[in-house]
Image (cartoon, rainbow, N blue to C red; front, side):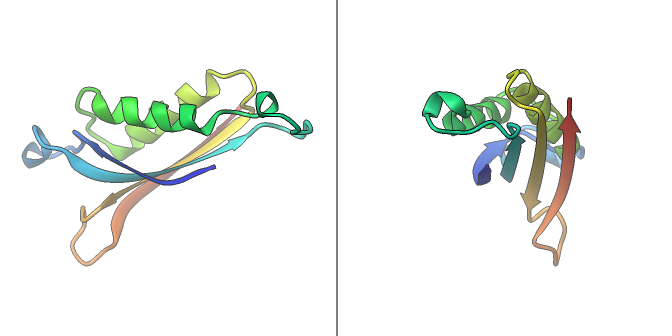
Length: 109
């Protein structure tokens, strides 16, 4: 699991959100099945998961955090070892008096 990965992305639906970076906090939980894990080759490289999130954040503007979460999940599922994925995206400061706006998506094969 990658927890609370901090990135900045061009994200948001409203006009005032275009053309500027905003902070996101991203959690990615992977289901790799019940196979024994004894070597690094038996599991997934968490740096690779973080790279997926960072590359998406560095890409073109995305209107919704739901889209960001979905694209992250689909990219993780491109690895055949991943049987399921849960992605949670938080956008701190998006709602007055709330810690964050957030969404969570779950996909499985």
